[in-house]
Length: 169
Image 1 (tube, rainbow, N blue to C red):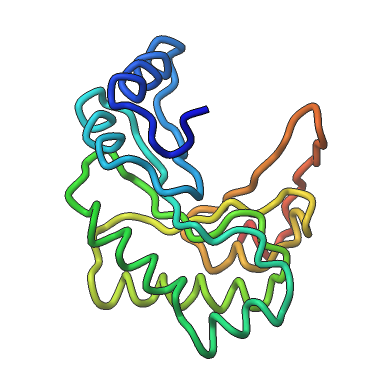
Image 2: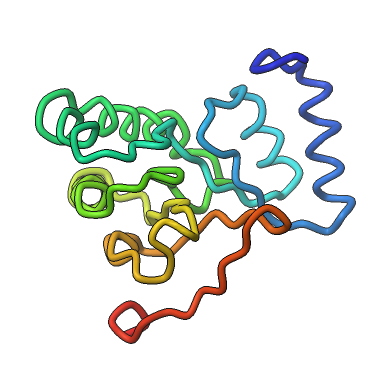
């Protein structure tokens, strides 16, 4: 009903509910959140995974435009980090949500991970939220991340993740 214009008191109330159920972290997902979300998470002691709005880049063509021409996704990543690097609640930077094309996604994640580590390393790790069924545990783009991450919809679809040796080692 309110979309991205949620009042601060509602954000605070929601985050208090996170604490009440004893959750220690949350992923704010691939939508820009109100700036107060992170301040409130800092004050309430909730660890946050913050993510840029890169979702459903499913085709090689979509990635090629971004990776080779526009680079807007890289700029969004930098702006997220520069905006929130002083937020103690944030412990992971997330790069994508449920994007299908693995090789080009891996290129992007490698690129921002190297940029972060070489040019403005804040000590945080890189992750993503890959769809657990696309392609699942054989997703080589996870190797570009510091922390592997999948989206799983229990009750809608459920994928058992059996990690191959090349990902575990």
